Image (cartoon, rainbow, N blue to C red; front, side, top):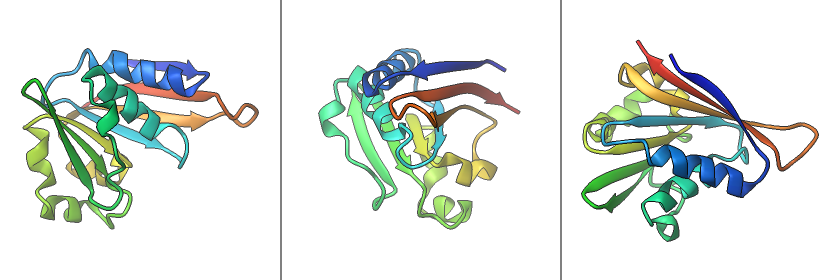
Length: 144
């Protein structure tokens, strides 16, 4: 299990970190994004999409559950499952089908942990109590 921590000192640091990660991922990879409101999850997604030249396309999927992007035959699915009451709602919208068809970024993904595939990347964002610009970004490869 690979674990690491990255200290982001700005929104651009967070975006660049995500862009670097995006360069390493392929379809069927799943990234769970966990952290308080305002901790950097959406900035991470912006950076991730910028690797594919899609940064202008981003919008929060808060009310639609998922936004779909496509670049060079790669599907990218950005989920926000914050408003779901449990993982059965994710299943009802056919959420698991997305896992096989592209790269999935799932904000608040810990809420559907019980139906995630046995292998995924978990990224946790943590605000710094003393400096509002600093974020600790914890990266962990999960494999059961």
